[in-house]
Image (cartoon, rainbow, N blue to C red; front, top):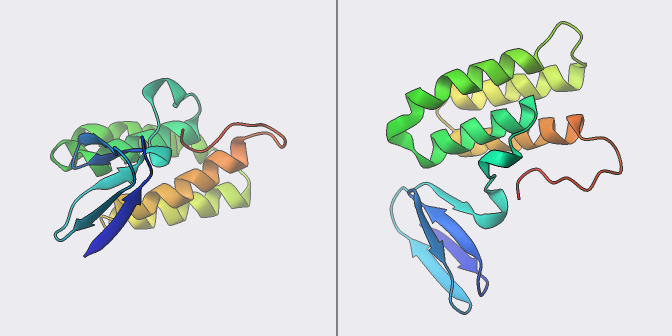
Length: 132
């Protein structure tokens, strides 16, 4: 069982459906679902770098289990772009963590190393976030 609290006006994606809280709302999910809180959701126009494209394709694969295969190519292209010969060790390590989670079918957990990759490519002092 998963218990999630949404603040007034906060949005989430639940099995592909966008839900919005009216007032403070508590949800109790009693079976397996794909759920993302609004702050974990990235819009297509924000997928502007290889790490962001990796996050975005993984996010889509997570919320759209029936369409995972169509997101696989975008994921592989982004991984290839990140794992160039001159990639720093921290990038390589995050890519390995990401790939391990994907190989286990843990798309939600793979979002964490994808966020790490975004942080690694975001210049210090930048106000960009991992997912808007």
